Structure formats: structure tokens, C-alpha cells
Length: 185
Length: 185
DNA sequence: GTCTATATTCCGATAGAC
DNA sequence: GTCTATCGGAATATAGAC
Image (cartoon, rainbow over all chains, first blue to last red; front, side):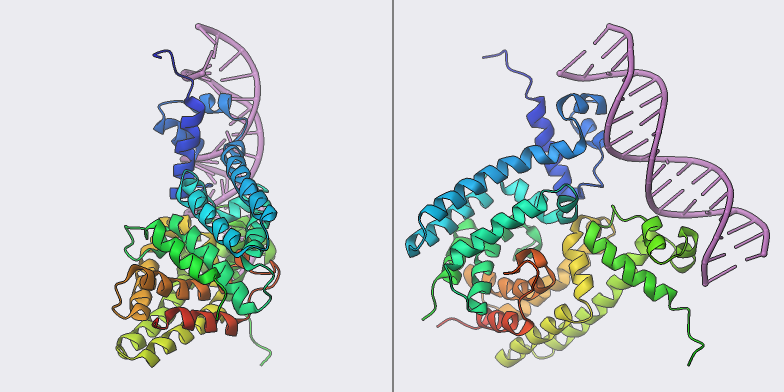
């Protein structure tokens, strides 16, 4: 299988995502992305209509993954075991192939708002909260449920790591998230 | 006391902080800040040497507040009651007059890195973690300590509110933070 | 698919009058 | 302290050759 090629589109996505997360969406120019790939700006515009389209391309992938997760959660409501499984699956999404996208989002909230993708994502996270919370309306319980989700999302955010260079292991984050979401005694 | 005026500098700070948090630092132009204040760009440059200086002006205020907090914490180490008090004081900083600054930071991490203020802030948060953690080296305990701090910082972040329009009350956040930082049985 | 060249717009910043 | 006017540069995006 020597005759591959035309993975240029994926390479653009990967490099753009990396630079957007590192330096910010606005601060990263198409020139810089092109230089990293030994291309020209014009070549980028062959693969993506605009700079915003690059973001939409990987955001829609994450949206699908979250929709699958929420769909599963909706169809298994009212089971404590299912609520745990939702957190487990969310942890897998956040720590897996979508980790760079999560990191991009946490570092570029204003850009996400302006690109019109923030609201849709916020709505999905809200539903995740509701699934984990399972109808409890005590404010402290709700906050703990949100913190369970946040504990998992923080895996993509080096700012809050114990060692700034080392993120907490995924299994520790999951364990703490599960105990936060568990009903109190 | 009719002869006031020359609060222009403070008005610039307030409006810039608001727009930076809402739309992002890079996306907010000096022209836009000036228009909101019925001034011109040139007038802004009388009060601040550069756009970056506006950020530094309110970031150094927050740095002082955090330094006071950490200084108090350092001098009261090894007391469980003092560790709780550190969280209480941090909650007051985060939910008080510095809430807009905290919000700006969470929304503009890449800009903070580029302006050279991110590292100093990260170091202070790291020390706060260490004070709250009090030498415990179990990874789960460390993560819970960090989540205690995060629970308080999230008060400035509408993204993770139960109702997107209403942030959790400060007292609830503080209570959950205290129980997260408390030693397990 | 990728290039060179360019159109257009807007930004941060400065000069100098008042 | 605030203005008008302007500079230099960099950004997104497009046209058209190969």
C-alpha cells in the first residue's frame, strides 16, 4: 500500500488543533499552520473554505461522540450503575482521542462563542450534569455532580495538575469522579 | 465634592476587563474599548502605554491579593483550621471584587501565557494546592484538594453552572470545597 | 493540489495640534 | 487629556497559473 497520500486534510486538522490549544485561536495564523506543514496559505484554502471551518471540522466529531454518550445515558436512566457508566464513558472520551479537542475548547471559550459552537457544547454538558445528578435538587449535590464531570475534563488541562508537567492518571480522576457522584449517606 | 473626574483610567480598566472576558483578549480591539467609553484610541494610549499594560494593571492587583492570602497561609501551616480559613479567604477573593479578573483569566489562558503572567499565577495556585493538601501525597487526596480550589474558581465561570444563567451561591461552593479538602476517614 | 501574487481590511501604535 | 491623522504591518481570503 505505497500509493497513499492526500492525508493533507487530516494533517492540517491535527496541527491546527495543536497550535490553537497552545497559542490560542486568534493568535494562530494560517501562515503559521502552513509553515509547520511546509505548505502555503493557499493550499489550506483548498482543503478548508475558511479558518472557522477548520474548527467546525473537529468540533463536529466531538459533538457526535458526546451525542452517542448522551443517547446511551438517556436510554438507561434511573439506574445508579448506568450513571456510573456514563462517567466512565465520558472519561474515555476526554482522555482518549478527543483530549486535544477538549483542550482546545477550554483554552478558547471566547472563540467558541463567536464561532457559534459554544452554546451547543454547553447544552450537552448541561445534559451530562443532569444525567449524573439524577433528579437530585440539593444545590450541594448538584455542585458535586458538576465537579465529577469537571474532575474528568481537567485531565485535559495542565493548569490544575499536581505536577504542572504531569496530568493525574485517568483512573484516579475517574475514581474521584465516581465518589463525587455517588449518593451521600 | 463636585470636582472629581480623571476616573478615566479606572473606567478603561473596567470596560476592557469586561470585553476581554466576554469576547477574548485578541478579538477585542482598542477601538472597541474606546467607543464604549466615548473616547478615541489615542486617549487610551495616554493612560496605558500598550494594550498589554491594561492587562498587567489589573493582574498585578490580583497577584497582590493572592500573595497576601498565601503569606497568611504559610505562617499558619500545620493547622487544620488554618487550612479551612485559607479556602474561606480564597472564596472571598474569587467571589468578590476580583471575580471579573478570575473570569478574564479562565477565558484567556493563551493570552496570559503570551503576556508572561500565566506562569506566576499558576505558581500561586500550585502553592494554594500545597497549603490545602498539607503534605498528603495520595494522588486521590491531592486531586480532591485541587477540586476544592476549582470548585471555588468555578464561581466565576458560567459554563459550569447548574442554571447557565445563575451561578451557585458562594456559601454552597465553600461548603463543598471544605468537605473536599477535609481528611477522609 | 499546490503555487505566486495580490486585494482588502483592520490592528496596535505614534506624531503633533489644541 | 483628548483629539485628528496616519504609519507600518499582518491577517484572512481570492484569482489564476501550473
